[in-house]
Amino acid sequence: MAQSGDFLRGHTETIILRLLLDGDSYGYEISKNIVERGMGLIDIKDATIYTAFRRMENDGLLATYWGEGAGGARRRYYSITEKGRKLYEEKKAEWQKLRTVLDNLILGGK
Amino acid sequence: MYERFEEYLSKEFKGLPKTKAVNDFKEELLGNLVEKAEELKAKGESDEDKVFQLCVNSIDGFKETLKELRGKPMLIKGAIKAANLIVYLVAYLIVLTGVYLGISFAYGNWSESWLIFVVPNFVLAMAYCLALTSSFYRKGKYALGRLLIVPAISLGVVGAYLCVSVLMDMWSKSWLMLLFLPSLILLCDIIAGFAAKRNKILFAELMAVVTITSVMVYVTLGILGILAWHPYWLIIVGGGAASAIIFAVYLKSKTSKAG
Image (cartoon, rainbow over all chains, first blue to last red; front, side, top):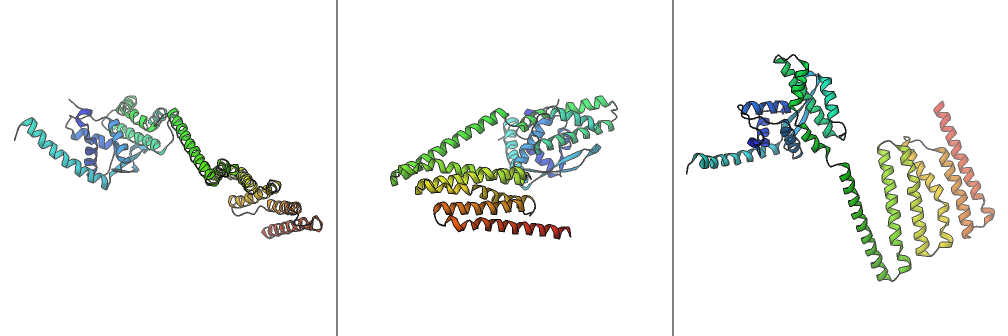
């Protein structure tokens, strides 16, 4: 059963930044990657991704450029900026802490 | 399929402002739609209509992004602009009133300080006209730019006339300044025309400036009693001679170009 919005809320930007650490990419590919890596549990809406792109670009986390695409259309590529990398590291550290806390709370522990 | 998607997006984007952000988003969507269609076809889907519909459905939520790109409705934008204008106007009037009261109380000169309410308006209107001229020039609309020089110079001269008349109490003579308005306008237009027409001198206007100025100098000096009417009418003859020289230079330059 694919989950959407709630499951990813607050993490969409971090996920996009993580994917872009592997290399520049474009909207459709990023969307496809999220769905594929989501092991069938994630179904992200295109609108969520496009809104995140706009916001992240305005915040200087992403840079864009045009490249050749399929069928005569152009692709809008996104690349992660230095600011984006720093934010990703911060978000990753936050996530690791949160995961430990949630593990303790949900699975039980000290 | 590309054209079909393009047509679909053109309809969906109709009415949106033609900004770079909007155009980029439209092209990005087009690229993603085409990509998706190619992939579906590669997987064996041959029904064009089905492929089109599947692709279009997959980007259904893009209208949310369109709302963001559309920005604030025109009505709200207009209301914000009007409110800002009122705030600036009130602030401007408060500042002017403060300066007026301050100077009037400090110097006790209430009969002249009212100029504080008038002169800044002339200066602002003149600056606005010149800013518009500069803007039109940058866009290559030289004729409109040159046209705005007329009110700009007129406002400057009339403002100066008021200042001189009130502050120096020279109403009986200061009107002579207005006689030079046509010459000044023409002179500024020659300079503006020189820039607009890529360093081309407007000979006809130059001749007109020299002639008109010589007449106005003669009339002004005569009225002020600085020079006698006779034989200083020769100033006008001198202006005519200078115009003739300009005309000769014009003819020579034209002949040398033709040669």
